[in-house]
Length: 227
Ligand code: 5RP
Image (tube, rainbow, N blue to C red; front, side, top):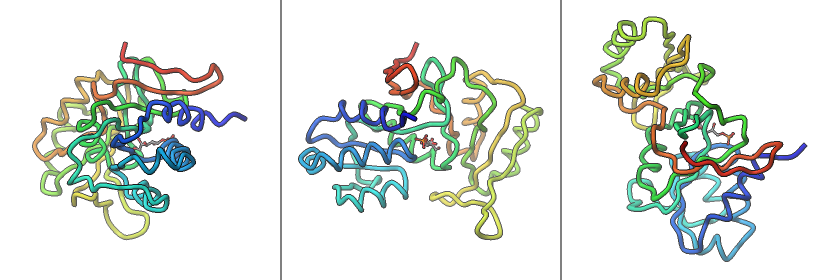
């Protein structure tokens, strides 16, 4: 069976020019892209990388690429990242990693944010498969829960808990993660509004940030732009 994530990564590689600063997120498609870059030694030696992901940073170090810390990176030429699902306007939900705050900072620093992955991620309108994830200041936990109960009473909210220790998952910023599952598809603006609740650091919906999406599937590789 064809490896669609690898096909998408190969198409992404074509967009990278020597000397650029490349931002990379997390996931298997990103790992494929880094493997392809590593195979082109001249290109790899000319690039500088920045990443929002601890795991991806470890991979970058393994390849011995130049890595600049996220607090020091001033400009990114292209930020590539996977996602869980994106719609026709390339609004993307990024839920699995719980690192969406750093990912959004990188995407916003970049000249261009490009989504990459297999074509199962592309939908006309975001559905309810994935939760909207909120990074929440610990002191705002009750306020955010109360706001959700009042404004979206049908939503089911769970705190992301650690499987390796007793207690909540704590983000790299020292905050909690709330997974908000909707019972019916929501409008983008309704989900985006959650950002305004005091204590919500970021949510995992990337609105109007991606300029292109490179996806691969049975019908080949497609490069999509917001409709
Ligand atoms: C996590 C993400 C990841 O980028 C996404 O899950 C990676 O997907 P894949 O492994 O299919 O490339 O958004 O929040």
